[in-house]
Amino acid sequence: METPLATIGILLIFAGIIFLIISAAQSTDIKSGGGTVIFIGPIPIALGTDKGP
Image (cartoon, rainbow, N blue to C red):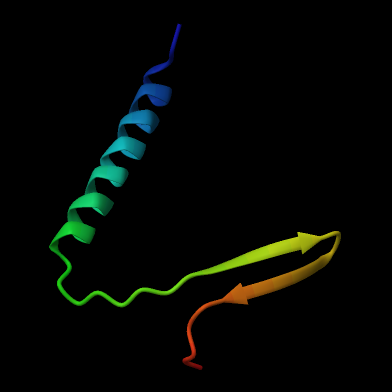
């Protein structure tokens, strides 16, 4: 049986995802870029696609 706190937490996660989708759909200034971080043991390797600082 789920507790009320678990149900509230799941609903808040879904509400956050919906707000992110709505805000992304309303954005008119689109600038794309991407990046990732790969961890090999304790050493992080960062990769990106933007030329900016």
